[in-house]
Image (cartoon, rainbow, N blue to C red):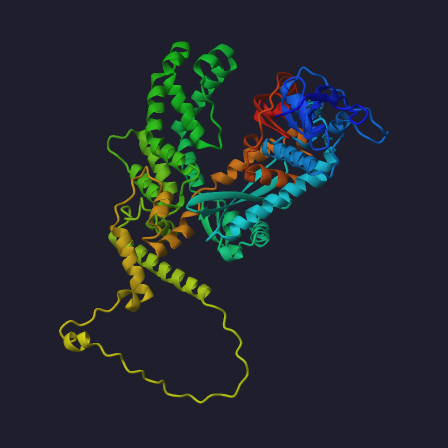
Length: 632
């Protein structure tokens, strides 16, 4: 049984905390294994210091203020001094926050001058007062290259295990009229399309085939793609075709670009051009009126994108009752607009299909091309305008993507189009024969890789050739008795040649029911890879190739937001690094950090960065911006 509660002698226990604690008496002394709280009589383990005692008071008696013991030496730091001391620049915590800040600026496309802004510095100081924000130059010279190097290593590791890599390549011009070429890599990883922007390099010389060839070779060497048999996808420009040929790379022409060229031919027909001119004037009139623009939401086209003309005409027809009421448009214009949309509907749908991300698009080109050619055949019920549009499109499409065996092979390994219904039977047999040959080639290639390298034999005296020793066959009573009546079946897998095995696998693959058009070919292959192991290897090589360079062109919007008017002095090296990081960084830092939102903090953030939908985390801020031209 515990004795009486006694005060701790202040001559020995000098800390103020002991005014709230004592010890039970025991056997004429004190039980110093536990201190007893005088306020709640709880036992607190005593280990020779006051840490547990202070923690107990802070946890259970928050209204009690305990002053620390007066320092006995000028060198002793108080708890307040320790918690307010600045991090050393080399400390792990400071390094982690710096990494988070550069991640935020790269991922959200913030200028590196952000770290000099008063609002940003206030935000960071609110979250972590002990952190000192490095200078802008530190982020440019140290933090940015370090993050780029880390992410580049990650991308290199992914590409190293790719079966094959396809490249999309296109050129763009910044606001400061500097010309760049961006290259993006695509491959299949666990039956998912994986894409990485590799580099964005300036083109100071003219965009000749030879200059682009040098850039492509630089990409292949820098990223270790020589053994991946890269194929390059570009627009239909002659210099790109020359570059691919000189670089000795397979070349695929962007089908979306082909659709744009063919549609532009139709839009330049006199009747269509006159109609589009009238619609532009109408939409321009309404867009200049704030009230009318808000009510009708008309669209004005972009000359270089034919589908924007389609959208403009479609919206014009949707709103034509209001437009007619306002401007009394000619009925003939309405009829002509309806005919134009009808004639271009198939091209619009094809463009939408080719713009999808995460799905194979090369295998779609051949069936789409065949369907579009069929759709542009002349019909007796067509008006003259529709006939002219169809003829212009058919004439342009017939020059592109016709009789391309690479496209047919890709469709043959796509479970949606594997029956090749758009080809005559003779052509189908030829493509399946090519597929069989490709399987045999892949098997032989992998068998060579799997063979161990021959080890050097030690020098020794030559041994004369000896005839092989014939081993007597083990006797089997059942075989001796019934062998002639029931001959043993040979194992097919042992006797079949690579050619025969490939033919059988192709035959079984063709017997499979086609995948519905709304299905996912890559997911189908994930489930059936074991059933068709050799065709799946060929499928990886073909389905990783995009049928369009749209993915490369989408980098332009990102790059345009990075190389803005306020940041046009960025060095080419930094443009390359920033575009690379913005497109390749995948980690969502906001999911890794606890919510630390505070009302005044968010207010200062909104005032500083013009952000909406703000999410704040330690060392980083992610959010949608209100007008990038204002932010940058």
